Amino acid sequence: MKVQECVVVNEVVRHDPHGRRVWDEIIVPAGVKQALVNQALLSLLVRPGSTFVSTALHGMCTLHGPPGTGKTTLARGLPEQLAGFVAGRAVRLIEINPHGLMSAEHGQSQQRVDELLGDYVPSLAADGMPTVVVLDEVESMAVARSAASLAANPADVHRATDAVLTALDRNAVQHPHLFVVATSNFTEALDEAFLSRSDAAILVPLPDPAGLHAIVRSTLAALGDKYPPLGRLAEHPKLEAITAEAVGLDGRRTRKAVFQALARDLATVLDPGLLTLDSLAETLKDAAGLEAQGARDAAL
Ligand SMILES: Nc1ncnc2c1ncn2[C@@H]1O[C@H](COP(=O)(O)OP(=O)(O)O)[C@@H](O)[C@H]1O
Ligand SMILES: [Mg+2]
Image (cartoon, rainbow, N blue to C red; front, top):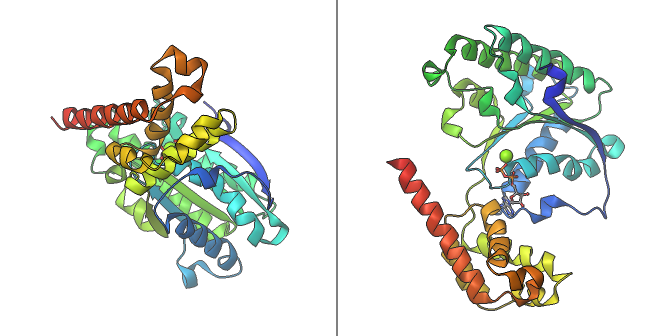
């Protein structure tokens, strides 16, 4: 696999005050989104023209938390949140999928990481436009060295991790218009040295009861355009109580549970407007129960 193939998105996002934003559909505790926007903006506005020594900012933050909590969606949506505040009103989005990078060939990973982060990504942003670089599921690159002894080729993993850190250090000094958002489902496996280079590590937790309510409500409301009874179900006074039973589900599964409820019956597949609160309640409860069982099994 060529390093170029690891760049899965490379686009310019322009400020659009009327754009529909997936960002708004991700429901996270107050402060999470603002922390991400503030950190990125501060970095993109302050670092150019300042020396690395004076700011000690690496231009990077880590979004960490359980899978399905919205980290990747937030990272991808960040450029449109920033575009209104930067000169030129445009921000480039570069997304990297590091999974293909860990080559089986001995010693290749380090070279590839270095080529990708140190050379190729900066070359894509050579025009100086503020750029958000999304390193999705970075744990596949920056595995903790302490855990690496379990890996098939630990020496290579060590070298690749070093290459990530070296490239980030180099970019921090040479390319202040780059801001890296790393996402991770397994914070405990992230390299300490990597985390210490993050200007901020932002936790994206599982939704709390209010969050679950808001997610189910927004899922139903979105369907309500096409199936008006679901729009009314979204505003049902008992919805809050039934969604509270779903504690433990992540955002992705919570949204999916609404569709599982529809899929239970051919009648609701053919006419989703027939969905009842009871059926939805049961599906949410079952999904949360399965999730809890899965967590118990995994702990055994
Ligand atoms: N906090 C959330 N609020 C609303 N929907 C969510 C949330 N988290 C996840 N989702 C749903 O799950 C999908 C996948 O989320 P994603 O960003 O890939 O999560 P992660 O990267 O944390 O695994 C989103 O597009 C959205 O439909
Ligand atoms: Mg993700």
